[in-house]
Amino acid sequence: MSFHILYPKPLPPRDNQSLPNENGFTATEIASLRNGWRHFKRRFGYHSKQIFMKFYQEHEQMLEKFRNRMGKFNMQQLHRHPQELLQVYGNLIEQGLDNMTYMHVLMTAISQRHRMFGVTGYEIKLQTDHITLYILALLEKIISPTFVSGLEKLRRLINAYHCEDACDELLEESSNEALHN
Ligand code: HEM
Image (cartoon, rainbow, N blue to C red; front, side):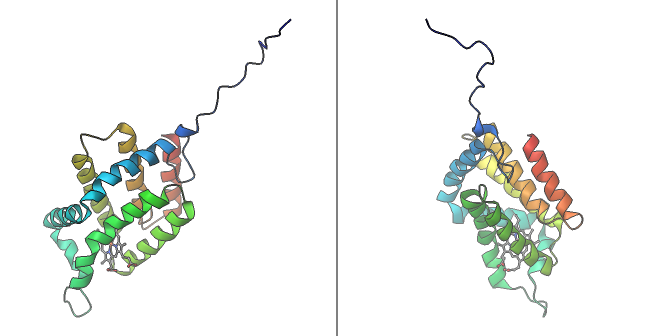
């Protein structure tokens, strides 16, 4: 004689793929961002130049942040920045999304440097908006809604590290929002 357990019913297996991690990203968002990033990286130098040119054409006044005390442009910094900036995206996507400590150490150092140079949270927001739109247009044909939501969370996260007031609350809000998405 065989017995079938009718009650309690076994719980369905837990779907960890759709649960956000401590940084607010789901496993599918991380996989999707990494996949998209591989395409971006193939022409990294080209894309970083495009992003730089278009951004400073629209927001020429931001070049002022790269002047030294003598009022001259620090050409080295200016030249380096487009690649450094996108390398941050690369580092976060490849190593930071599932590593809270790495993400926090990297972003804290960068936001401190920006504060030293008087770069505001609003200016960072303009830049992250610009990058998000560029990446979405570039990968338009191959991206999924998961990629879009992952990229949006990344944008919010970078912005949150640069907010001037109530940073802790905003950071918390950003990861709470991520948790509820
Ligand atoms: C997505 C947004 C941005 C990211 C990820 C980013 C990333 C970086 C990184 C990695 C550094 C070098 C930090 C270091 O060496 O310690 C840096 C420095 C700097 N960034 Fe940004 N940046 C962003 C947006 C901006 C914007 C919008 C401006 C100006 C309006 C700006 C101005 C500067 C300046 C003046 C420095 C210091 C110069 C230097 O260290 O070379 N950044 N940024």
